[in-house]
Image (cartoon, rainbow, N blue to C red):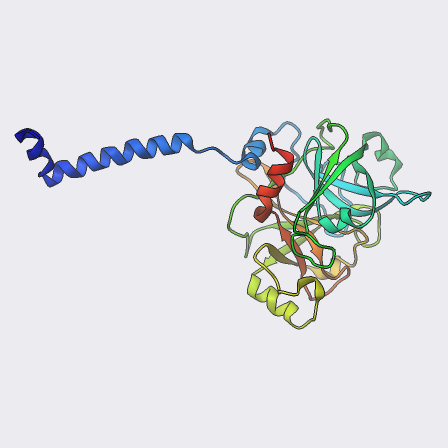
Length: 299
């Protein structure tokens, strides 16, 4: 090493600037190699072509207008020689996939998905209805019907859905932090108050410790290990307007004003079907992004 190089390396200020430059170069290289996960990339690529306005929400407990929550799906089951019934809700997340609770599709025989309507008894909406046959179901590998853990699954349709103002996917909530306190969240579901309609209820997410306390008073075989961090608890802000639900699998959404989109936070797993002080337990979507992406956006 010559004298000039040695002098530079023994100068603290010079060493500082050399280190800073090396860090900047390495950091720039690292940042250029960062790849967005599919759920984030797909959401940003959706654009706002058919995205509905985020506000206002419909009065709680009442039917919403077609297109207000265009991701809402009905999952139809059919037993041999019987009519199709619709016991579960789902959420369209891609042209060929609907996200739902695993208990909705593992127990029974799902055959079709209906989209584009908010009232099964309103014949005026039939022209906008989209019906797709189910090609396959994908249940989380660690789900069991005897437990509420890992209660998440996907319905794969036989053909692509064409997006419109009435049929449009919802983005997934991908952040690690849980929206609490004053965050506006809504549970959208079929079968509100005994009617065959889509309704929305204002809900809040409870901190996990409070949720554990609420369910600690009950011996529940579905959560033998208690409430896990892969789950969330939600309760209606105004329970009086939310009497009962005839369909399982409510979708809990949060508004993302930065992208003018809804994001799916949780999927109703179990809890009281009618007005109660006990919160509903949800499957936390952000904890299952790897599973969802491996099925929906594998390529």
